[in-house]
Image (cartoon, rainbow, N blue to C red; front, side, top):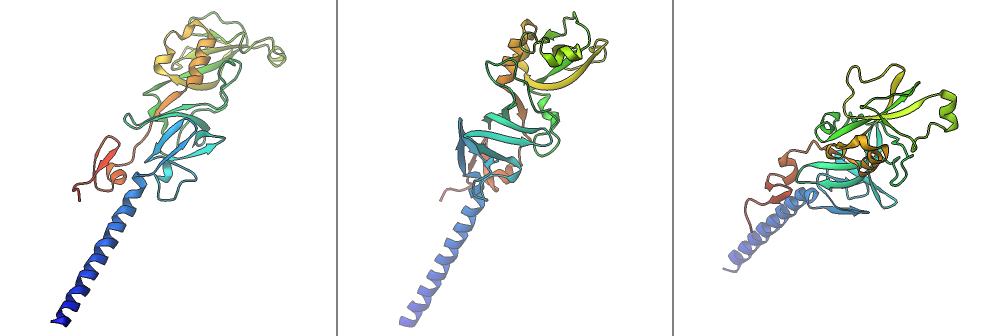
Length: 244
């Protein structure tokens, strides 16, 4: 009787051990969707996003952000790094600002050229949410309803511009055939939110303010199976099929 009791006890111990191990394995698989980080004013950095210094099991490496001087940045090669203003998990969008732009300083210029070719931030997606702002240089003054004079923010009396004898303008919206006047060339492009482009022809100060607010990209989200590890999902929340 005692031997049978010992044998049964061993089986109970083995089963309990196996159940414990399987539970640990499941939790390890789900950890990537349960990590949350913060940096500066971004407090909800979670799957699929992750910070560079987060544990390796957190998030998806394709959506890695960095935290520099308490500012959240995303690197979008070959364009460069952008400040992250917000992440909307429900709409699957990310709001970005060019680091060259400074609020209340309309002479500050964007430093990155927005051509997103790699990773989940494809150039295709920004057209759905944002509008381009073209910086145009002309050899002669232009009187056009399409062009907004950048003076006095980008003053043509600066020595470098005087030497080149050029005039500076911006155009909001897509550039079409015939939009460039003779003697003009598009030198740079930045992005602004679509709803901020309304009323753009009032002044360049207004356009610059819109640029400093940022623009949005729609993010190519991972498959639901990868996010929730075969659980069912509602928006950004994963739920188990069964509750222990």
